[in-house]
Image 1 (cartoon, rainbow, N blue to C red):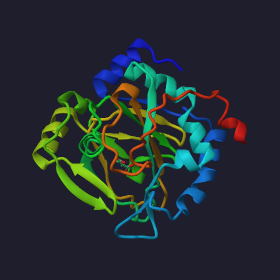
Image 2 (cartoon, rainbow, N blue to C red):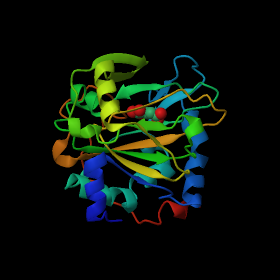
Image 3 (cartoon, rainbow, N blue to C red):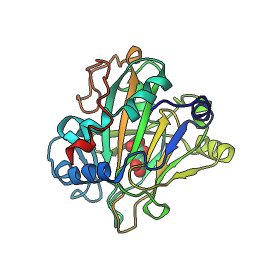
Length: 262
Ligand SMILES: O=C(O)CCC(=O)C(=O)O
């Protein structure tokens, strides 16, 4: 898939591009089918909700231990636009699954830019990476969708941020209230909603957050973080599943390869 000139302009203006149903129902079923084995892991790549430790908050690195998710991360539908947006070869800096379980156990995410941790902790030189959000479940307004501030990336990297220990092993650099109010008043807040299989390409400094999921339904999103190879991280303190040290350029597989697992 190649992005058109107007899509690239839209990405530069809003900081994200949304594709409803980019994956078909067979592909979604394969990814959903892999969820139980991901969520039943017990290694330190699994971060639990503070309020409900039976519930997984984040599963890092699933592209490396789940074949459907490995294939997802290499689909040309995703990899080729990444190269276009970043203007060069890319590698996967990180993947994380946020299952956002229902009944309130999937807790909120304070307003932040993802790039903060990658810059401060991992030594990523520039915000030249893209967060790809793949909807594993339907994301409706009732399931506390991901909320973005469109255009907020144009204000640049907000480095005056406070470290907030959100859950064991996962630090979040959260925006101060004054900055958040200024950005929200200027640009508004948009919920990302769509059926399972929808995909959003989101700039790494777009401000985003979400509320507790008080619905009875899971709302899983897989986040794949693609970085430009020339923007590779310089620090290696965090484990591989948070800061991949293999900067080999990705080679896309065949667009049918995920479906072939059916
Ligand atoms: O999926 C969500 O609700 C928010 C996750 C998020 O903000 C993040 O992983 O950076």
